[in-house]
Image (cartoon, rainbow, N blue to C red; front, top):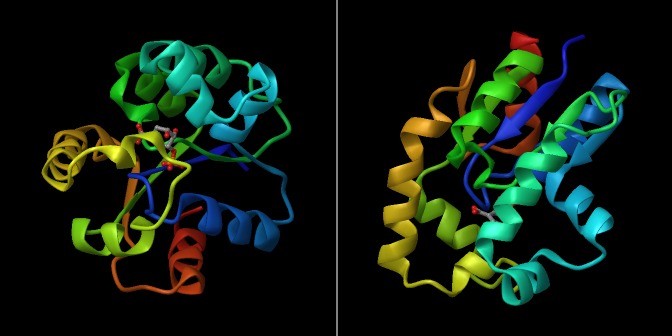
Length: 162
Ligand code: S3P
């Protein structure tokens, strides 16, 4: 089985779906945000505050390339796709699955979260970011619309592709 990368905006369900998928396939999974936090020794929010977003993006680029090879499911931070070299790397080293979700549902899912630094932006800015990223996400090998779907349904759909 090829490595599977799950991409998508914050709140698209990458981590939840990734966990369920890994369990169903009996393979290990890794989350790039958790991996960065472990390597750097700070939560993402603290990296943003102390080192800035540019440093975080550098970590994303760097650590994407050093993920342990046994990890078959990789869930990625919502902004992983904004760097073209990351999109290229993921497509070359695995199957990229974009979990799409409409903006209103995303906001309902993550409205109360205070661990994601970008959520301190205004709603219009977040929507703009979501729109700006759509073309990057859409470069994935597979696009799955998760809007209104349960985790099990999304996992089932992915299973039909891999
Ligand atoms: C980000 C999404 C976050 C995390 C960081 C930046 C983004 O991951 O990587 O806060 O730029 O969209 P999740 O998509 O898992 O929330």
